[in-house]
Length: 509
Image (cartoon, rainbow, N blue to C red):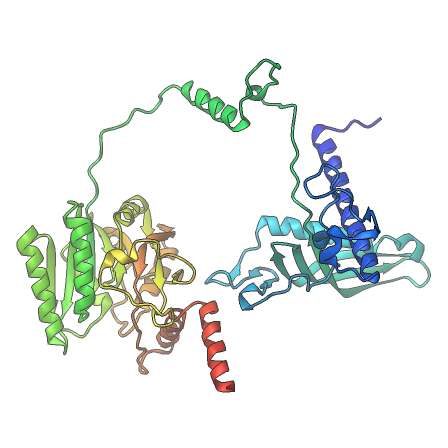
């Protein structure tokens, strides 16, 4: 006689439970369909009666013998179970191919997760069992080959919907034998059952042993906490705290051309975050003198005010009359630093927090790693019917959400590294002029190097929206990138859809 291990027994019971749940759903659907023929709507079945004094469901909700909610479990299997009341209620499909395509991320293409892979495998296995249920009588067998493509969505109330295009192999072994490939569409629904609670009486854990009737009842979560605390108390102190290590100095390099009001906000933030807190940091401002001479002079005056208050080393100004080039400006700032200095390339539109500086120090290691943080970029406030104040602290408090902005996964302008590593990577391409692209080429060089690339989102690094003008004389690649960034910063897909709907209503009326 075959002996089942503990895992096999658990699996067998799980399959039995799944079979019973499927049978329960089918019975509820049969009841709903039968009562519909008698003129009852599915949402009224809970209080329906077969005849006077004989309720359809004698036990009410909450009773131990309650049979379930037919208005939920009795819905027929179809793709229109969920009825949206407005655009926000419409369920979105995701495309399944070799990879997963989804609107949820800025990068729509991503790897298919292990959970989804396992779920698809289970679904395909069930489909093939149904297809081959009468294969012996028909003298043929159909084998699964691959999923060509598919769509899936999650209905949080009813379950998972799937549309799959399957490539199958048809093998006929009786009569005229043949083997051909065929394609079939499968429409699958994995229906949710009701929430159930199962109480476990016998615990297998030593800290959850059965108690006598005279023992005071202790909640399970308190037993868990007590056990964990006692376990950690038994661990001897292996590592003794070392004395605090002096923090690495972060050298900000900030190119600036015009933008006086924005620079005033940035300098006020730098004063509060770094200077007043005596943070180990230095700011190098590469200040361009352009046609807007008032901005140049007023920005210089701001720097001088800070220098009078905190000393000449608090902010270092580097003046230039050249045509603005971000790459050349960063090179000018780096020329004042040594190879062992930690550098952070900064943008005047950025808002940062002390925690951001800590992440810079943790993720940047000389001759080992370069840190490219993923910043949060705010959308156009006009589209959101908002106005952004000059006070930088407004942008720190709970502004990160999917409606206010997006994670700039393809932005590489903010980067921290050591100057020696910058030189080893060949530096920025100084031949690139105009908007952007120098950071992308530098990032490509970093990937090809032996240095480790550190990428992570930083909710305390926020890029405040500003309009972008794409010069018609830009290189084709630069212009495409500029227009793409310009479009991404307008607003989310949901917001743009609402704008389109309002515009459509105006045109129709």
